[in-house]
Length: 303
Image (tube, rainbow, N blue to C red; front, side, top):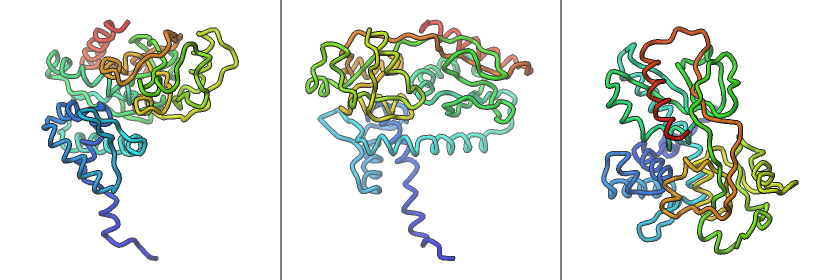
């Protein structure tokens, strides 16, 4: 049976440091913030991304002065390889870490974990240096009996089968786009939004219908591209692909920097909320109780 030559296999595996730098830059839309996250210099991040662009033979970012914007190809690539890189990180942590009853393993929604949870983890370490928490991305509910997680972050109703729920907070969803898109498509009311330019999240196919209903319009539909994660949606909107519905707490950096703007003052609030969930009837450790209490304290600022 024919097999690929060894150089083909090497060619299909870019250097992991370059991939990690690339993912950090896509997640933050900034080489400087990516450098802070990776504990590298900005020039080192730039070199790693240039290496990856050379390896792949395609540009990954549009550079305008000090601002960088991921290309559509970069957004799609990050979505594809990001979970794999995170699994490599998680597997390596498990292999290197000795067995330790101080460790908790938490499943988190990807965008929630990157934008809301990750920046707060230094505070958890400062408060509970004895506590080791490992995180892995999961987008949908799973069976706790089949997966080795102590808890998970859930968005929806308190209906995760076989789990107890602790309410974290509700969200406010806003319509956002790039300043350039808005300049090309003046919007005075929700009826002015082109259906083909409405970007959607795969897990929330009815979001635009609910948003239009909140704006007093019926029978409006979105016919634009669909994305798997909110950060992909945010990057696509910032790149000028159209208008996206995104929880405001996830895009504070983009709103503050002006790379995303809100063309209309319509906010969507719903019964769904973010919850910490854990197996019902299980034996909870004091360490989990400390993590839960810390997380609920952090979430109180969003409530």
